[in-house]
Image (cartoon, rainbow over all chains, first blue to last red; front, side, top):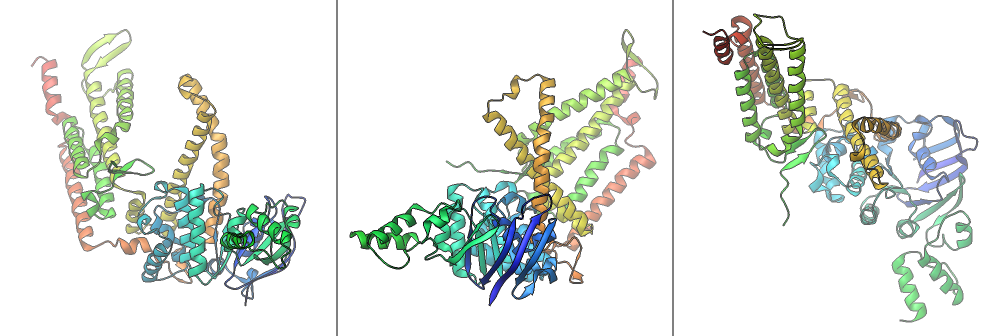
Length: 282
Length: 294
């Protein structure tokens, strides 16, 4: 079943000359891990905001087309309905933390859903184990690092058990160590949760590792969509849209060409390493 | 060797990580605050307010509040004193018998004015320390629990919680801007007092710009969590996880009632008997006796 269906979507922010999204047609299957890549101002955040329903609900502009979540038009869904179906994590961990302790922060979304207190308690215990934040539950926001806050933002969304989780540049404001932690959390989410995960990210290397499907957005259009294996076959096309392809992927593709091998080169680091070792001989 | 942290930062100050006062429900702690905050207003005798102050300091020690952290309030203690005494020096009160102590030109120093200033000063200091005690033993979430226990509407406590959080974010942004300026070589210590004030006003521009952006981000974040500003979800009462973890027990109600009764009894001593009037102050009586040569 398709988790998301977008047809003929156009969006122009009021006061802007050019539309931010132009004729987007897209389907995303249930329980897939999707990476959205593209340069700055390409329309990635706008696209996921449309999936979350933030557009047109919270922004003014011209909206055309339709977004459906599990077959139901987003226009027919209430705020609570959308929150139950789609969870979204933003890039700034501070702006998402509105409560005075980690536990309250996780409970807040669950209270909004009207869950009984006993279930809220169970979900807090479950999600804190899953995301390894048990020791942080009593802490206030100003006692946490940026990475910890982002982990909690993700935990509070997971706790709501939405069918779709969107993460909009979740590592852009974090240090390298915290970034790695978030990516390993994404790995856990992919492994443990049966949900559709959409990650907007500039770190192509990590996205190639995790994603089942990658979407390239440029100048408000979906320029390319495909499985991660084979997505980077046309490096020139991708780099012409201001997206830098990781050196490891470039290297293995060159090696494939030199050896005259058919088929797509691997994109995951371990597979690249293994293929390179085989092709070059240990 | 790792140093054990005894105090935890809050938006308003510091609270101890462990304290015997945490055994009391936040509602009881709020009642203690309200009572200790009002008691000095019914007391004119400075000695009683000094004793009250000592009792509050005793509570600080009992609650394991690091007294070194109170140093940051000392400038306030002195500034309040300075303003009160200067005000009563230049604008003496007409109440009671005027006893002139000293005259320098047009400035006359009256005993009753100075005594009344002392009375007001210790009242305010006692009240100030009662407030500091509350904020040194209650985290923000304790305050919210206390207000919700008093059946304050969800919208009001939610607004209060969000305001506290916004204050924290505002202060973090302020710190970032200051550090960014220092990183570019600005030394505020070189500026004159007026320069510092002017410079501080300049902080407001980036701070307000950031605040507007933050407001939008926070509102989008709240929307994404399905926030509805109402105490009802799908026609049912909104669940309150925080209160379910901190229910008000009969014991808490008993403690609160006992404290309020003690307060009422204390107040009636002053209202109906004038027990704590300045005229009953032993020091005041002794000095007056001395000044009148009796």
